[in-house]
Length: 415
Image 1 (cartoon, helix red, strand yellow):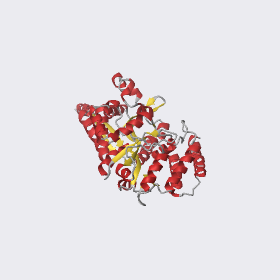
Image 2: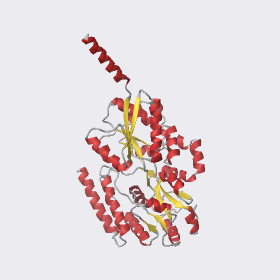
Image 3: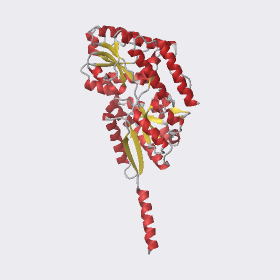
Image 4: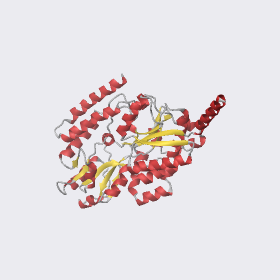
């Protein structure tokens, strides 16, 4: 009798285990309309796969918080299935071979593989390492030069005429700053990816293709810093340590550098007519692809990764990339979503939403991503702050010292 009870219990437990859905965890790093759209998509996925797969979405904090938590989880061997990570923060995970290759899943599904050309090439190139795709774009963006059209008109400027170069930006800034002491042509942002774009736009470089050599000390980059320093000293551009969004909305700023993802925010909150242009070019044209991607971790059970792959396909479908773009203002990662009647109607209604796609197709590249790059970024961000706050600072000497300090960081990391 006891033996029969034991066998029955064993069979019951086995049946329960078979029936239990596969658990998938995803860490995400955004709030508001962005997280709600993601949660809605995940809820729909769970309904479609009820009893088979159960996805748990966990808010992991900011991009920086998420990176810190993931590095700790990697050490503790307690990673989630999937995580939303910003491009420039993946280096240590790549070096640690932490990400699962998505190429192996794609190659076994001819129907899905045939759809890969539907993704914008820049997004796929940006997430391909050693021939392996390691992520799908979730909330991609490029930086835009937003303008206060009302203020342009007030200063006698044409709000439809793009300031192509940084000299053009300076010139229109002079006209706007002439409106009064509280007016500035440009609020200069020191967000790290904006700084990358600023140096690239002058024809400068930051780091070598293999991430082992700093290239930041150059005549192009010195000229870029000196120009910025002059614009701040002349009080035609302004920089603030905090409260940048409040200043943008004040109606006293002519131009501001912000993400594609700011379009909906500005349209909803600005008391002035919002315009947008491509980022300036002063000898260079590259712009960084911002936002974050979704990565799957290698060190998870196979059944969990199989379920995670189904979630990634669902997130990156035409329908959901279109939903994401329409709800959040971020970019659609698929051409079919971009070309859909719904998106084309939205672009006709709000033409500035098309500017980021123009940049994507002609100028966008992935951000540097190497293991020590965040430490390098901190160093050259400090350099920018110094020259902005000290109009007597020697830009050449500062940049040379930054080059040397950052090269030591690289050498120590790769030793």
